[in-house]
Image: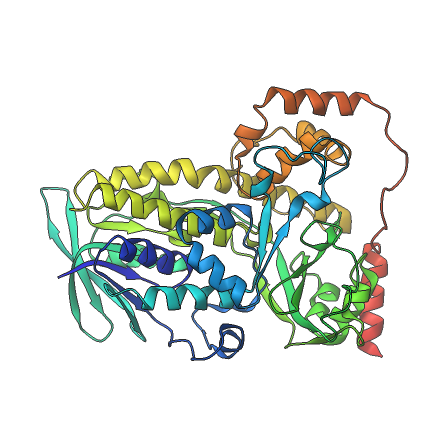
Length: 493
């Protein structure tokens, strides 16, 4: 019997297999897509065809939480990523001047404020190779879980005892983990087995993204422009966003966020429209100059998935013994906030610890996993649901679009809007406030933890009472009319 079957070889599935395999567990990973090609990770990642993971072709961020998880639990994976061209970036270089600035005594915790510049396929491939090197772990590609093997445990209970693949193979297991990503395949498995599936919590995003990768032509030159956002360039404004993230091996990505249904902004999917919008957006023009960089592929469009907290992952229904969920199968957060990969890593390694505490996958494991999801994932679901809704409302107002039908409110704001606005303003000049918001933005500290700090709150209030400079503090983006007109004119030309 296989000890654990993991359905899905994405970030969460591979990280869990790595953590369990390192502890001596027998693990079999079942993955729908084909295996990655051999060769250097950076090149192989570009050739890896993964139709079942379309989001892998878009920009991703491994924020400070993800780096901390790798440093603590998989330092060899971090070292391998760095050896393949990934880079660590110190976010404190973007902090406002003040105590704790570089060279004047950093504060405890500042060493955690780093992100890893790496493309999603490169990190996936490095993880994949680390997992394949473990003697107790097997990865089966081209294999899909079609259903569950289960046995009744009483009048209303079930226990999962394995899986059935699309090829008819029956694989007994002590534990089955759904790491199938956003589709959360275990919902259909349970429904087919006649097991009730609890309702999920959802908070829609209602936005579209358009992204394109580039490679610098002269990698040894200074970068074409400044990274005004620490590890990124660009901005998030009142009617759209345009953000550039450097990645590994002199590659960078530019991603636009826009409201769906806007025909003019839909022209961002064309190379000419995309380049025009880059040239108009603050901080991006020098990066996409033909002499500075070359495109690596087409513009790719994607609809942002909703924020989802799976009901079965948080104890809203009695857990099914022998079945767990990891990563996006447990919780999806709006990709525009860049938390997905890091939360998947954190969740996977914490699940491995729980499984180690309950090696027989007894009746206590399910409730313990539900409690973990509630503590680790719920704060980011709630923040994502609120922020996605607020951003869509702000952009609709900024573009003059009609208000969307009001959905069921996602719950109270994790942080009152006026207080958060004041904190954002204070962070421009106060290093302590900047540090707190950066820890929240990189998932190291929850909103409740940051805004419960008395010193943080006192500094926010003091900054709010101080005089502020009038007028804009940086370059302005084009107005909605200017942006639409320029894109349309370029398309006609």
